[in-house]
Length: 233
Image (cartoon, rainbow, N blue to C red; front, side):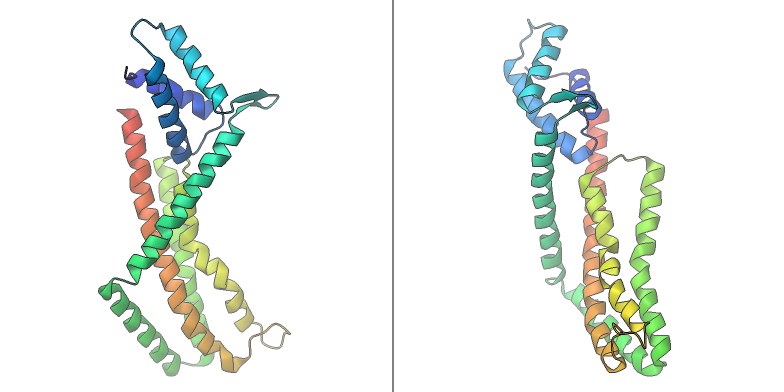
């Protein structure tokens, strides 16, 4: 017997109340509970019996009650781990797709060529400032997308959070290098003669990580909005 929209919504609300805040994690657990209930439920069962079945399924999944309320700590962590692995695979596919796209590779080549050209055209100090500005762009995109999603009240999603962080990850990762270049005279400063060669390597990596992270973000938002739409039907 298939569950009604109201019954599915009841299970979803219970999961959210019991600590499953992320959409993608909740959908995974919801599918499991719905399948289990549909295998047991019949037309003769009352609404009370349906809710009892839901509770039994929750307990099987590790539902616990304590002083702080209720939680699915074990199932939540397991599902989150599975989703994390899935995200990692999808990110690898996106990077692989990047290096198999001739147009994108051509743009990368032209961008690096222009970047090297600029390095020979301006002073070293101006080039470092220009490079730092390029590093900051993903962070500006991050804050723009974060604010846009906040206005849409799209809710929590592990994929969404990971994808948003991917946009800014290369900046945070390579920001140390940029700080080293701005710290002349200090022990950890990168020698002047190595600064440009290092940037010629770092900047393409920065572009690849930022671009693939943004692509993953766009895919994720489509999936999250699809989930929300399906739940509201």
